[in-house]
Amino acid sequence: EVFSKGADQIVEVGVWLGRSLTVLSAIAKAHNRWITGIDPYESDVVMLNDPKVLFQQANRNIVAAGVAGFADILREKSLDVAPTMARSTYLSGKRSLVGLVFIDGDHSPYQAFYDLCVWAPIVMPGGYVVVHDAHNLSKEVAYDAAVWFSLQGSEWSWTQDGKNPAPNADWASREKELFVFKKDASLPKEGVC
Image: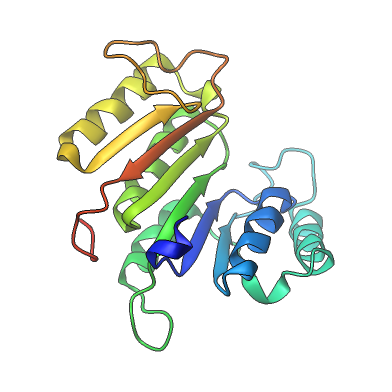
């Protein structure tokens, strides 16, 4: 859907072995677009696994899926990349339009919230921010995210596992896996960085 609205790329925050990245890359490939995966592959983040081995395996998975020309992995922290990507130019000097940011990073409550806040302004009007494994968000963090989006005005709407949360609902309940935030399509192309 986002590519038909003019998006040039998808961003995935948190790549690990590249499973979701390869699926999203296949979609990007079908539209002649690309995906940028971002993961620092740090030993404290990936626990007992060798970060270098995980990064190499993710790249092998991209090649094996046949989407190598449509996916890149930046071995950096997402909070460092977002401001740079907002200022960067892509595609022969024009600003790239990010249609989807898929947040699947370290899953700590406040990191998910910070990723949401720094990546949301980069998303094009009509685009989405999807937070995976949102069951890790505490009620406080979910409330902070709701307040943050409310402060952005009416430009954002959100659903939880495909349903609109009722006002005052416990939308961070443990059984919920996805939060989908959609940016209003009527905004100017540059968004609100």
